[in-house]
Structures are given as C-alpha cells and as structure tokens.
Length: 202
Ligand code: GTP
Ligand code: MG
Image (cartoon, rainbow, N blue to C red):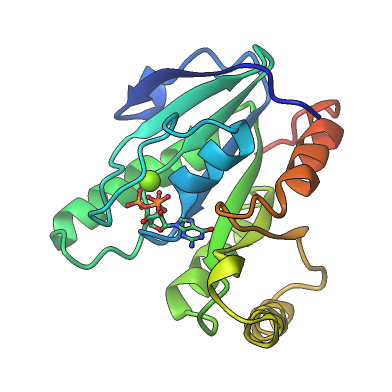
C-alpha cells in the first residue's frame, strides 16, 4: 500500500487532548531508543516526520500523525528509561494506560522489541499487561540490520517462548530495519487489512 501523504497533527499530554477518534489508529510503543520514531518515519518514507532522538526518552507526549488522510499513527513515550524520576515514570504510565484502554479508535498497538538482545523483563511485563487488558497488539522486532540472522532467530524465538508461557496464541510478529526498510510492506499490508475491520472493543 503506498503512503502518499503523512503529516504531523499534534502532541497531546493526555487522552482528552487527542484528535477526534474518527479514524483507525495505530500506536507505536517500546523501550526508549528501540526505534519507534525511526519506524514511523520509515513506514511513511519521511526523513523527519517523527523526531528521532539522540537522547533516549525524548518523546514525552502522545504524538499524532495522519497518514493518507485515512488513519493515525501515534508515537508514544518510551518506557524503561532510567534517567527520569520515579514519580514521572508513574505519571507517564497512568497517562499511557488511560490512552491505551480508553482510545476508542485504537486498532492495534505495535510493541517494538530490540532484536539484538535477549527477552527483557520489562518488555515481557508490558506485553502481558496489554494482553490482560485485552488491548490488541502486534510485536515488531527492530534494528535487524544491526545484528546477525542467528541472533535475531535466537532472541525472537526466546521472546515468543516466554510469551507462550502466558498466552495460548502469539500476536502477529514483524521484523524491521529502519535502515534497509525491511518489514515495511508487511506492516503496511497488515494496516490495510485491519483498517477495514470494525474497531475492537477495549
Ligand atoms: P525514544 O523516543 O527516545 O523513546 O526513542 P525511539 O524509540 O523513538 O527511538 P529512535 O527512533 O529515536 O531511535 C533511536 C536510535 O536508534 C537512533 O539513533 C536511530 O537512528 C537508531 N535506530 C532506530 N531504528 C534503527 C534501525 O532499524 N537500524 C539502525 N541501525 N538504527 C536504528
Ligand atoms: Mg521517539
């Protein structure tokens, strides 16, 4: 599916500031520096649509982009960033889960996982939390250009094995590189397919 148009809409500090929920919405979440903003730019073929950060943990707000005038992409703050205070982490967490559980037009949350490292406790905890709240999600293993095929296979297999300890079914999984653009067509095809279905309750 071609992306002909991609525009920044607004940054919101909370759910109530978000744009009217009148179009399918796909959000991107994951640990700081995992490559959320880079992936959004890669999907849209835009160099600087979403701000990528040299300093991890830069994205603080709920950032909406409108794609092809048809659906929203949302760049969310990264979790697991150690250099912010505990109270700030707690506040982000509340805002984030308020958005994730109450946003009516949220079709899918893409949870980004770094393919270069073995399963991390906070990633698994986050995925399990989404699952228990029945928030629809897919997994995106990122930065595949930065590691070997064997490592990607090993890490992603371990991650899936960990998930299967809790869940009967695996969510859709994608493998991406913002550098080589691999995984782009697969994600866009998934969006095209799910975008025609009615929103899932949550
Ligand atoms: P926060 O907003 O701080 O949570 O980070 P983020 O998840 O949005 O990560 P961002 O896209 O800013 O990327 C972090 C760093 O990783 C940047 O230096 C990117 O250039 C780099 N990066 C992201 N994706 C890839 C990738 O697929 N391959 C490679 N080689 N580098 C990547
Ligand atoms: Mg970012």
